Length: 338
Ligand code: PEP
Ligand code: MN
Image (cartoon, rainbow, N blue to C red; front, side):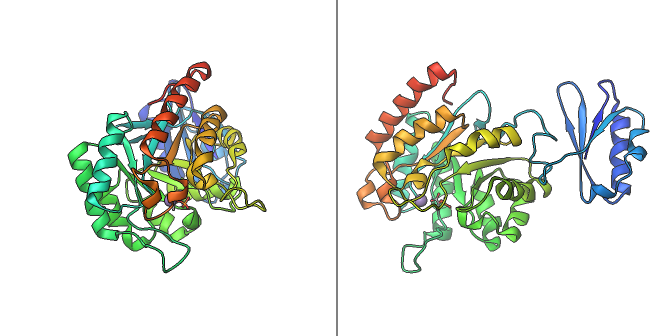
């Protein structure tokens, strides 16, 4: 349910509505807008008698939100959200790029990539310290040492850090270093993790589960938003299908329905989406054309010797070429690269 206040409603009137909602045992989420304030109601609002709210001073109307997700829905929040992560503003009007190696491998490697990205105007570095690997025998990440390396790279270069949190026990440590916490595909429905990250006060990049429907994905986002964290960015990274010409099937067709049903920004990860370096740039450009708000790309100075996901990782030269192509394509699309 959404309570829409009148244009001239006072702060006291908004507060009275919030208090009334709370007395009903429900949660109130005031959302100030350019013309009027709206107050979202979450909890079991089907039991609410709308008349008890409609009669309050300053209330214009009550709207029933039909989607199962509430705070993530465009019904409750008609304007596109802009999510701030360090210096980046992810959302309408710009196209943001997050890039870097799959894993933190060494301080030297991370500093080299961070310097390179900053020189290209890319202000968000991705790299996993905790790695969710299919095989227990594969490199599992540098863990806490990896986080320390990321923290030093941030300090030395000013780059923003995007890194994955895999487990509830890691939330505090990752939140100390990350400007944006990544929740990976395998954890999209790890509800204990979502609840904990929802209260940690850091922006989140929520990857789509590899077989998640749009509703399931937005319900996962709802967990984060319901915890009080408004800064959620969705990331399409490919889903599991019958085909095997690519590692996953990058579902760019999810972008328009995400835009239709939610106000949250969406980024595209063509690296995991294809699994093959030679296909990454085409799908990155397609992501921009499809209306996504940005890209997450795996980049490494020597992908052939990367400790994970080398086959889908661009080297600096390939990434430079992609950046140039994106800048050119952005012009006719009326978009600007951040
Ligand atoms: C990653 O970004 O390196 C990663 C593990 O992603 P995903 O969760 O999409 O597989
Ligand atoms: Mn990876």
